[in-house]
Image (cartoon, rainbow, N blue to C red; front, side, top):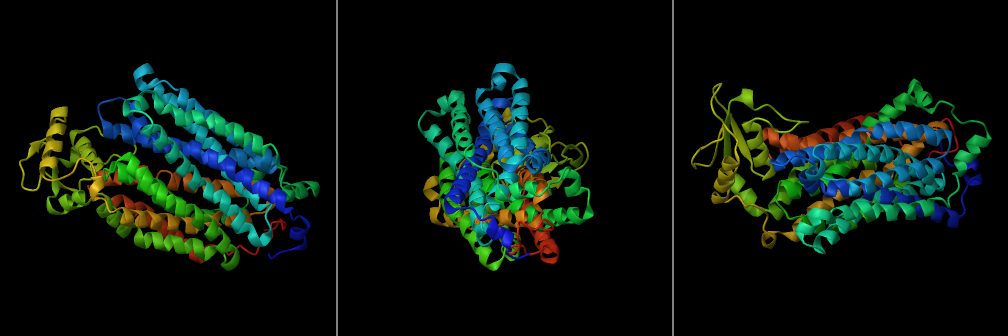
Length: 542
């Protein structure tokens, strides 16, 4: 549907619109900051809250706990989406931001594994679940609220500020963590300084609540309530009727899953990959990504603006196609740019793991247990490309680099681990990336390309989702596909990709997961996804 008299009748004064966009955007910045502070510190938190003795296992467990927050996002979408369609947009996202702020600050007060043992990990998990519930309800409320205030012909532009907040939140988390780490010794940061970024969320929560309390309910929602057209059962009306459920499924498979993997691959996985596979120091990683994110924030708004003029569908699907085609070459170039010595060693002195396949199963959502699994995890975390050769049943696990001596790893001990690391160093595998050898312009260019593709789909998607669904069930209907995609498909992308790397021995194999998802999204979207940018939000048959 195109612009209608109802759209013009409910136009919001420019001053009020600026307040709405500013308040919703700032609040969402703080909420994403809360969420990504954990991810930024995933490596350290794995060491503080999980049993010592296996650094790689601790890292994987910390990623799994990070992913647990994503698992409950769909539940948060249902609970808060229903409240948003029943009670109103404003009051619902006041609740979500309060829950997020309290849960994040709670992590800052937690005792560690050294203090109370495994109970620390369980408490951390509970708070991550609360964060996931909150973020599951926040996005739908903020996107719907801004879109229902915005002029029809500038809806993509104004909602793109909400989209940019995820990038700003990640940028802010990197900045705060980097400032804390550089202003004190590493020992002090590990002992108590890591708590500061979490505790800052209390200040951010106060600012967010103060700003959002000044807002009024959206004019579209108020008009719907005055006309008595609201839904009494938003969940049933959203997902229990095929006429709307099929739109939910199209939104999920034809737009949201692509956005999920493009955003998390380009922003979050790239950061973890540089640190934990390519061996780049945390400060250099933060700086490289921060420079790319500055460009990315502007690109999100640009693509939101552009979608108001040329449409949203093919911008989003174009990003999926570019991601499917360029993720592999982009990460190969990135690896060469930041750690050329590692890439040279992988190409000229390949490593080999000889195993009994019965003792070396794939670990996806657990921790390495057998000697073979632990050895492969160690190599993957060091960015070592290795080949696995299956041997006879009962044969011992062994390891060698190039034509070097074989190391018996049938019993995985600290001495065996030290011997493996020593052989890798002797063969030219660097323990860490050398900053003096980094090609900074090339690395920044590749990271900027990754955030470019993410922005291309992320900028228009809020307006697209709002326009797909009628006012009476809009909050509920758009929240679920978005949060399943970002929570389960995109949010678990780093964990799944690292598990694939460990299982295959190929440090680039994890990229086939986001490539496959982006390709599927492009195909389904090209066939089924409608164009929405001329639709009215006041037509409840949308």
